[in-house]
Image 1 (cartoon, rainbow, N blue to C red):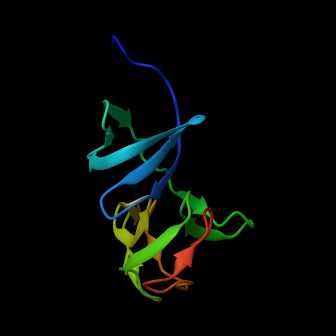
Image 2 (cartoon, rainbow, N blue to C red; image 1 turned 180 degrees about the vertical axis):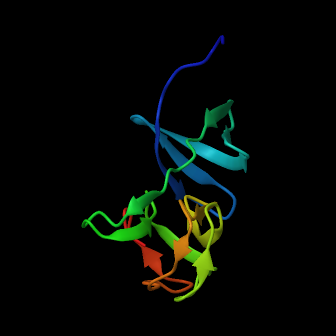
Length: 130
């Protein structure tokens, strides 16, 4: 629609108690941020902006040829639902990560049994690992 453009938010950093800096290309927007469903709203002193968020995809491989479940971005483990030896079904929640002030649920891509848990609540995990 009118006023729409495809641009990418490349970073979000806290700049005060209530405000965040949102890096969009080479520009930095300073203001309040609200996340609702798949939208990121940025309210500055001069204008407001709405960005559509990509829903992260989770992989079934650990990147080293192994058979694991990995997250596409770095984040903090806020809730560990899976336990070693636990059976799960496709779509079951395994882990909840916090990244960029949002929670991301890692769901089982298929039925199986948790072989090993390589993280704990409070751990920071790198992207493409978990």
